Image (cartoon, rainbow, N blue to C red; front, side, top):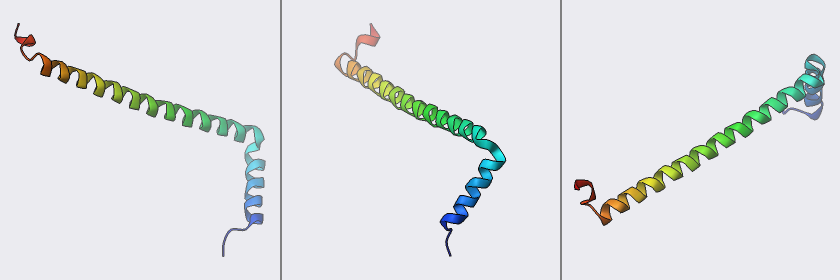
Length: 72
């Protein structure tokens, strides 16, 4: 026994009547902003991690080329 179309329709109508169309659209807009900022934060973390790894790699390559440069 699953959920039918009519049961879903009744729930949607009740939610719209209780909260109003304006509040629901506002909530959806806030949810969309939250998702966008989360994705932006995750992508900036990835780019920061890539920058850190590349700078560490460059430092290790410099040390391999001239290991006595720190002793001068």
